[in-house]
Length: 86
Image 1: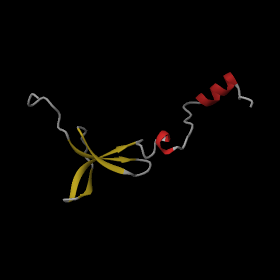
Image 2 (image 1 turned 120 degrees about the vertical axis):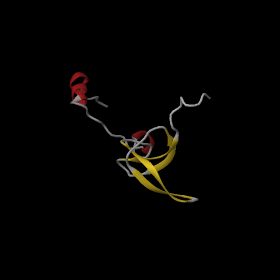
Image 3 (image 1 turned 30 degrees about the vertical axis):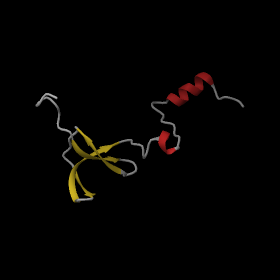
Image 4 (image 1 turned 30 degrees about the horizontal axis):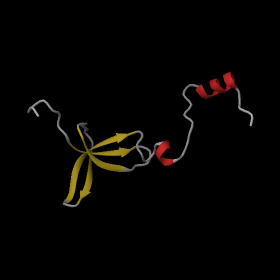
């Protein structure tokens, strides 16, 4: 690899905004927020990045389905195609 052209790749803690679950990984993203994280070698301070959705809150991984209605799209669909009769 050529020196000086790659971004800084460092440990970062990502935290789910909905569930509060956090995980430590490596990334090139930076943040002004920090968090204390306990490691086998002791407590260290890492950059903290808050994410809206992670595997802890995503409906596919949690098994909870929900309808996100963006500007009446669900009602618009139901008006156009009607309710399905079983």
